[in-house]
Length: 311
Image 1 (cartoon, rainbow, N blue to C red):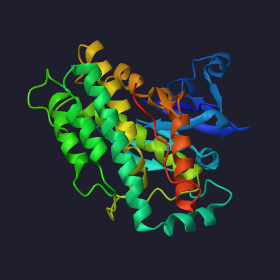
Image 2: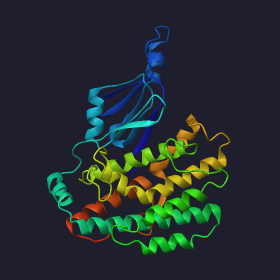
Image 3: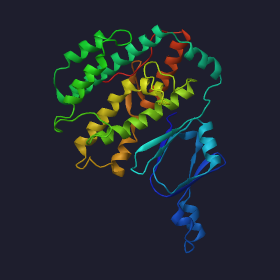
């Protein structure tokens, strides 16, 4: 089942009753002139088991401890946003699988050659997906990208990821002079940042569900990063976010501002249509297949991680 992604951008009371998320509006609850019957009609409920990601984007949101406990118990990712309305925090359950200890052990004991091979597969698929995005939107040569993808060796010692990225970002937005991919850079960096944050939460949630530690990466090893593995595994999925951002730019006159409309489009990331294992699947479901295959690689059952392909 595809889990819901919920966004709250206004003052809201969020609580729990009978396994249901209860949504109340403070301006209605505190208004003594409003009939009780109307107040009851304004209360919304959503089953906890249907929720995959929640985004809290307002300082006057109140959420109960009981609700947080139940959300985490159902492996929901909770994203909090800063004053500038950008994702700043991610809350995940500590335990998401019945065989957690065994899976942690397999992950920790994975050999360096296995990690390098997994990174090779990851970067190869990322570059191939980037090439499809370029070809679809720019109609320019991608032969170099495909050659780089083919030439990626174990561990990517020649850093083909960086070569591909330099060419990709230089050409992907032709109407934005001198665009560079920079978190603090000009739009649409803001859209990319927001989209990647949602993608990261989806991947981290799935890693926990597969019994893996999001902190222990196969390539990223920043000691200040609690989600190194999520950052690794999301790489081949980034081009799907890039394509969505391109579509937003092409259909939104004022894309430079993260309006509610733009955010609503970015919130569709978990249900984007992707192709994985030769079949169509929502992105969130595909990520689950990827993280499940990653564990099997760590345990020695298989040698290749399953990633989506762009079409």
